[in-house]
Image (cartoon, rainbow, N blue to C red; front, side, top):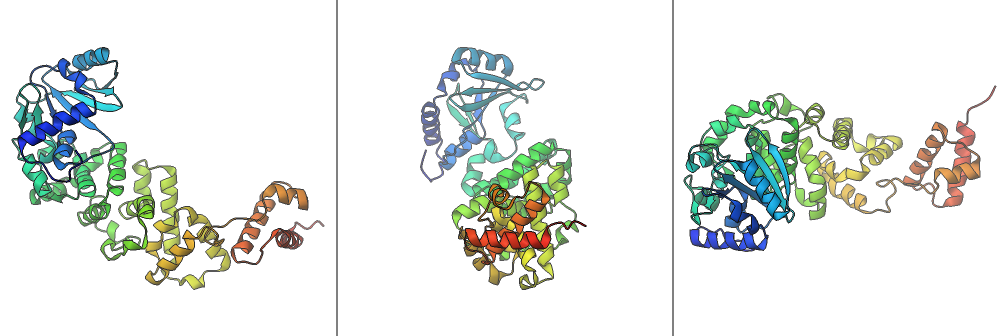
Amino acid sequence: MKSNNILTDHTLIIDELERSIEFYNWNSILPFLPKGSYLVGGYIRDIILGRVTEEIDVDIVVPLNAIEIGQTISNNTKSKFVILDKEREVVRIILNHICIDIANQVSSTIEGDLSSRDFSINSVAFLFDKNCLFDPLNGIKDLKLSLLRTHSEINLVNDPLRILRCFRFVSDLNFKIGHHLISSIKKNREKLSLVAKERINYEIQKIVNGKNALDAIILIKKFNIFGSDNFYKDSFFLDLEEINYAALNQKEKKKFLPLFFITQILDVASLEELKFSKAEVAKTRLLRKWYFSLKNRNIAQLSELERFKLHQELEMFLPSFIFFLPKKLRFDWLNRWRDKEDKLFHPSNLLNGDVIKKNLKIEDGPFLGELLQFLSKELAYKRINNFDEAIYKAEQWIEQNAPKCD
């Protein structure tokens, strides 16, 4: 299972499948599957690709009575049983921390069912009772070619989320999109508005966190998936192919590029509509705020307070912002941000509120907050270096800013 070579020989694929099923210990459900049941989808795809993933994706199709079969399996294997879709009879068994989805065959034939799946690479079936592979759509060949194809445009129309899932496979597997599929995507992209917002959110998160997210995001912009023609003329959106991403190390890329990519395909209103977290929306607002603040100004033109507030607001995710900066500043800013002792890029304080209240007889309230902000700024610009200097500066500030009584 750890081989990087793509398996094309059916016998080798079946051998690897059987080893995998035993290794992950879900073979106990097999005796309860009726004749005509088959395994399909991501599990077989990843076996063929020699791909080891953290999530084990098991999809099984049965001729009829998926709910009844799932309940029987659950009772006999002491596994958790969940009905995902009562009307269509789709259930989930959670066994040994593995999710096994079981669904009824929809078409009158297995080939008909496979033809209605999203892509050919997910349409290779393993027939349990015949112990053989069934690949009517040449999915194994497409896996070898790293090619995404769908049997029919209607497959996208029936579930437009598959448009986004296409880009997820670009991001995750570095696959190419077939020409006919590209045409279908462009023709049906507006149908994404019919999909539940949470499902779209989930796919976008998968896309921006994939190993080849950049390629997927470039295609999403090229095909104008999320906006009108005017949307991508917004000056906030950058030419992603011209950016040197080597400025970030691998850990930084994993942590900060997803947010940057999200901001390059969605505006704030779209993020809110698609139910992104409040934190993601807030971060995007700040990225946009400071980009437009600097768009027609030199960094050197910022006042001390403006520069301090920039770092205060962007501190926790500044690497997501560096690509909006002039190229000559990116490495310097990134290196300073990496230095946790740099008090401008990591604003902090020598005094906390309790110490100030105790030593300077100040009560909680906005006045105390303003004083702490002032001291943090003075520390950032190296005008205070120790406790005594901080107390002295605080006393001076209080004298100048304390409310005057008539």
